[in-house]
Image (cartoon, rainbow, N blue to C red; front, side, top):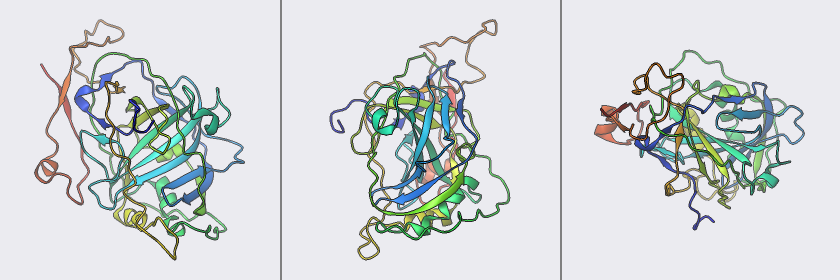
Length: 340
C-alpha cells in the first residue's frame, strides 16, 4: 500500500488549488484534561493516553460525521530549522509538526479495529514554528524531553508531573495561509495503523488540555489521506489547522537531543523522521476559509461555490523570498487574493 496507494500522506498543500466549502463546521475538542505516557520508541516520539482513562477527550464536528476518541500524539521534526514537518504549505516545511490521532468511537471499539475501516480515524496536524513564548500545554510535554533521551529501559517516573514554567507575554500566531473558494465535495473518513507499542524509554505526562494545545483558530484544510506510519492505510481524514503553535529554540534543541538507540549505543538522532511528500493524484483539499470579497451576491442567504473562482499566492515575505528557508526564519504569513 505504501508504494502503490493513490491517497497517501503527507502532501504539499497548494493554496491555489484549495476548494472552499461553506458547509464545513468548526472543529470541536472536549476541554477537560487527560494524562498519559511519553515514549521514545527509537523511531518516533509518541504520547499515548492512559488505558484506564475514565473521561476521554472527544473530537467532533468540523468535517467529521461521528465522534472520535483521542488516543495519541506523534512528533515530527528536523535536525535543523529548514525541515521537519511532514505536510508542507506552498512548498514550505516548518521546523516540526505535531499530529493528534483519534478513532471513531461510535462505529469501532479501538484504534486496532478502526485502522482498516471507513470513517475510522482522524489526524489533526499542528505546525510548529519557533517563537519566544511557547504554547503552555506544549511546555508540559517539552519539559519531559530529558527523561526520554534514549530508547531502552523505561526511566524512573517522577512522583508528579513536570512543573509548568510561568510564561509572560503573548504572540499572535500568523495564519498558515489565506485559502481558496470553490466546490463542495464529500469526504470519506478513514483511519491509521502504528498500533504496536514499541519498547522504549517513557515518562508520565499529567493533565494535558488538548483544546489549549491547539492554536487559536477555527480555520483548517482537510483531505482524504493515509497514515504516515508503516502500513500506510488509506483511511485517514486529515485536518490541518491554519495557524502554527510556538516552540522556543531551547525546547527545539532539547527535542533534537533525543536519540534512536539506547544510552550505550545511541545511534543517530531521532529527528528527520518525516515521511517524504506523496503525490496528490487529483484528490481535493477542502477549506472552511472564505474571503470577504468572493463575488457572491449579498442577496444570497448561503454562498454557492463557483468553479471559475480561483486564487493565487502573493509573494512570501521578503525574508523568505530573499533567503528561502534559511536557518532561523521569522514567523511567516502567506497572503492570497482572488484574480479578477
